[in-house]
Structures are given as structure tokens and as C-alpha cells.
Length: 185
Image 1 (spheres, rainbow, N blue to C red):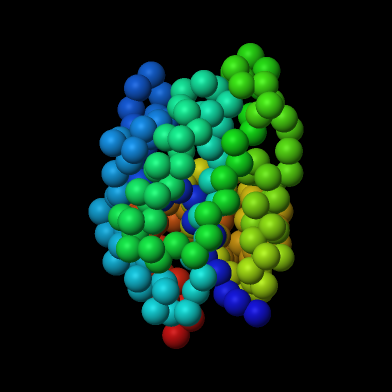
Image 2 (image 1 turned 180 degrees about the vertical axis):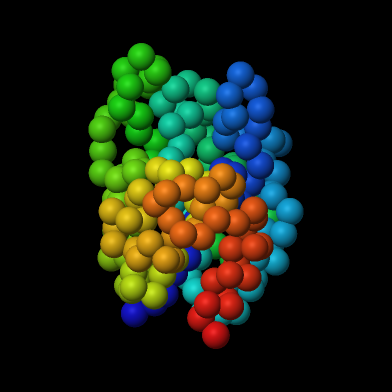
């Protein structure tokens, strides 16, 4: 079985954009990696981890972006991360009918975090041992999804303000990568 690092995308891999609220990039030109991300990913790959992005992406549902822009951002993500990401899972659903304009994405589903669906799908498809795996996210819903999937709380890392659901809080993916690789040595 493989060991994996499950990564949220926005706020972990790339910068969030400011507007009336922080949001994901809607066009490829706005997709910018956070400092240290390529080094962090390379460090985790050298340690033998599969790298898997699991990300809620409801902006197509909300009418903020086009599917082709999402696809181009995915291509840009792969290029800027030196093709170190092994798999990418994205949930485009949103449960709130007052926010959804593309009705096919109006849904309460098992893939939208905090539900564990994307993690469990990756586990099955990539033969992942969750007992040896970690999750790095920047929101409580990321951490909740990891717990719901069965990842040990000691292997859940939150970037940013602390969270009562995890014991490890860091300031960046690079700091998380140092913590993870220090723990497995």
C-alpha cells in the first residue's frame, strides 16, 4: 500500500485572492503558487509519499468561473508544481440553492469537504494506507474531512490559525513538509 499526503489546494498550494471575501482564482492568470511549495512537494516526494490534491471548487456552480478555466488552472497547477502532484480530486458541488446558478452542481454530496468522499476515493483508486498518510489543509473543513476518512488527528496539519481538531498548526506547506519528514525519520 502507498502512503499519501492529501493537500487542499487554495491557501495551501496557491494564494487566495481578496475581494469582498477571500476566494479561489477564477482564471489561470490569477493562479499563483505560495512561496516554498515546489520545495515542499519535492521534499514529500523524496520521503516516498503520493501527493493528492483534494479540493472543494464550487465556483463553476456559483457562476464565477467557466469549466475550461478550471481545466486550465489544473494544467497550470501541474506545470508550476513540476508535475509532482500524483492525482487531483475536485468537488464542484454546492448545497445552497441561493448561491448556485449552474443547477447540475446543486447537491449535498459525499465528496464536498467536510465529507470524506474525495479522500476515500483516492484511497481506493491509489491503494493508500490512511494509517501512514497525512492531510494538510487551511480550513476546519479540511481537518474534519481527514478525521471523517480515518486519518489520525496527529497526522492532520492546519496551515494558519489553530484549530481544536488538530494538534499541529504551521504557517506554510514547507513548514508542514519539514514536520512530516521529521516525524517519519
